[in-house]
Length: 279
Ligand SMILES: C[S@@+](CC[C@H](N)C(=O)[O-])C[C@H]1O[C@@H](n2cnc3c(N)ncnc32)[C@H](O)[C@@H]1O
Image (cartoon, rainbow, N blue to C red; front, side):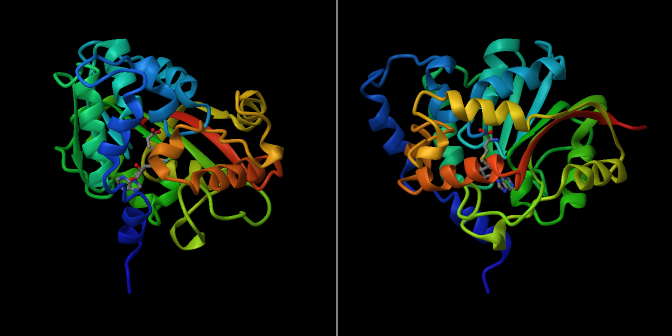
């Protein structure tokens, strides 16, 4: 039987993604021309509310040029590049998907940020980094794929420095059954959602205390309404950005329409939190 981690890795398999992205970018910037973080944002911020969410959370994390940041489940590296280019900090991204890590490395080179932003393939449950290394750890739209939430948070705590900040941005269960597929899972077998209350309890048990705890559900509903591609009710709204279809393929549109519906119908909510080690 295929284990859960393998199924999640297959969901984000991204074979040949770097070439697909290279081709898609030809129209806006030929190979050899430096790209900006802002230009890539519709493609590489793989979470609700896109770069705006990363901006807000980064502000709360109080990053400095000397900060060492770990982005767990970094995707194709949009948030990591935003943090390094805005704050001058150094960012390591870790992701389960080798195809995403390859694309992240390519895009970072195209943005001339490779001296401060690096990526490696790895599992959030066994991060390939030393204890107490990072001033900030980001976890954006990743936890919903992870079965053992308690162990995940303990692993984040292990790598966070004393006084460091843990930034988590996730989808939470509210009321009713989730309609699948959604962008992180084809069905419930790789989707491990908790309610906001369960999330808070797991974080507390792992030794975190909250500096910021915010329900972003209404902000996401408003964002879905105002995305340029049209209202989610139409069934044609790409929501997270049509360009994420480049990353996830043709099915992304229906996955994202389901996500919008789940949130609109109060089946799912959206939680932002910034935490620090309790002791
Ligand atoms: C929805 S994407 C979010 C990407 C990125 N955080 C962002 O906001 O742009 C979820 C990412 O989590 C990664 N992921 C899922 N489970 C993981 C695990 N156990 N370890 C590392 N990465 C994981 C996936 O490969 C995928 O890139």
